[in-house]
Image (cartoon, rainbow, N blue to C red):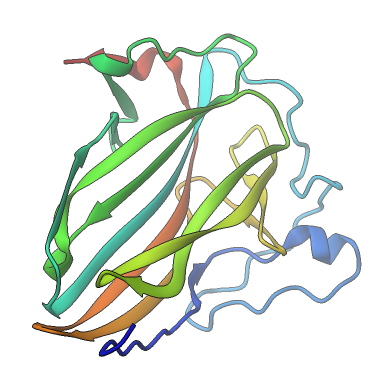
Amino acid sequence: MEGLTMKSNRGVVFLFFAACLLAACGAPPAAEPSLLPSPTPQPTTPQGVASPVLNPLPDKYLFIEVWVDTGGSGNLPQIRMDRPRYQFDALAGILDIFASRADISLAASQWGFIGQGQSLSGAAGGGAASQLVTIDRFPFELSFDIFSGILEAGFPQLEPVPVILLAVSEDGVLALQIGEQLTQLPVGESWSHRDAAELALDEYNGVFDIVSTITNYGWLDRSQIQTRD
């Protein structure tokens, strides 16, 4: 695009646990971030976690959130989002499903929900859009959106990366594959990818900050799933 310059700085920001499946197969584990202590190695199964459960736990459900936040600084195009389909209170463990999607429910044989969404912040705008996807089996395939490296009409475009939820343990540790990388997420931990893109186009001159995150909230009480207007 004429008149547009862009700088991309790709990289994983937070990687909390090494790829245990690779370790079990004899390949060298992925390097740990220097600011985090190395985890104590745990025995693993071919699914990537110790003692993966084969069925959903009674009266519990899994909640995993896959989110993209686009922020920025300087003078950027302002966009607003307003299509949230749920709200999750991580401290209270309460999942509110808006009345327009009250038809969403979990059978005893289903594992839980994936919350997928995007938000805008800072100079990029504000608001959020989200939806819930039911996890009905393991392994479970989904996609994880990251910055494609392209600015279209002055705004970052996203591209999907395949993700497979491989297995989960009774204490909520999640084994997953993100692209070609195998990793684990203990309860409350996240895996993130961050990009920066500079926009210099017409009257705009600023930098976008795009953060894509997968967070594992583990097993939660089904009684805490609510609907509201």
